[in-house]
Amino acid sequence: MQGDMPSGATGAAVTGTGELTDAERCAFRERGYFVREAIFGEAELSRLRAAVEDIHRRISAAASAEVEVERVDGLRFQDILGSRVKWEWRESMSGDIRSMEPVHHLSDTVDALIDDARLCAPVRDLLNETGVSLFTDKLNFKRPGGAPFPWHQDAPYWAFGCRHVDRLVSVQIYLDDATEENGCLWMIPGSHTRGHIPAPTDRGDDTLARLYTDVAQLEDLQKIAVVAPAGSALFFDSYLVHGSKSNRSSQSRRALVLTYQPPELPVRDTDTVRVPRAGRVGLAGLVRRFRRLLGGAG
Ligand SMILES: O=C(O)CCC(=O)C(=O)O
Image (cartoon, protein in one colour):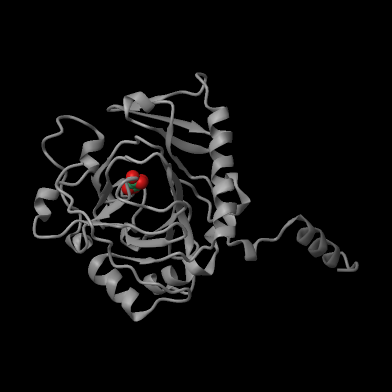
């Protein structure tokens, strides 16, 4: 990871379960993020963990030499079961999956989470909209020994195919306690107000280095470790500079990241809008509608 990270700071934790509080609105505007601590209880966490491990198992089982491997710099990517899979870049762990995007089509539990009011209601308020839609979702795994993730902003990753990157809000749901030891996220509060920050110049011709951030340009800002218990949700701006260190613990650090946008916009790199579950008409509903049209019983 580039730049020094002081230790011991816990970030701007704000607890709550409903719509946005004034403190959260202010933290998001000024710092670019806030945390709602432990909003998911043990029973919900167990369900979510089982769901993500099932996704991981199915994707791992489908990964084979026949699926084309794309290499960018030292990183390996594969498209498996409709998900872009990024493999761990630390050489000794190259058989481990680091991230999968998207995954909601592979799990009802994850799909339902997207409509959870504890996540949507604050985002709707942040965007000043009457509703929200899904832009993308990602499952991050950092197994013991997993490598650091360089400082970056998410907006430049999305800018190629999206004209409203300033209208995207991400929510990271912590499936495990996030600690400094297991490689929690680090944030640079206030960096989101500086627009796109140029890439470091010391990484040669690496393609992906263009998407990283030269934190030397932010020396006036503090670096904060966002330590939080499992079940917490971190809401953050698409321009907020963040990164992580390696996982030095003996446990995995898993997280789901949901990125929302204003309502009725298509999911990243598709023409399809994800309709909230409550608005979906299932097969039974279609049959009922058809029978009503024919004048039969509803
Ligand atoms: O979980 C991490 O270590 C960092 C992941 C991250 O920042 C990202 O996926 O954009």
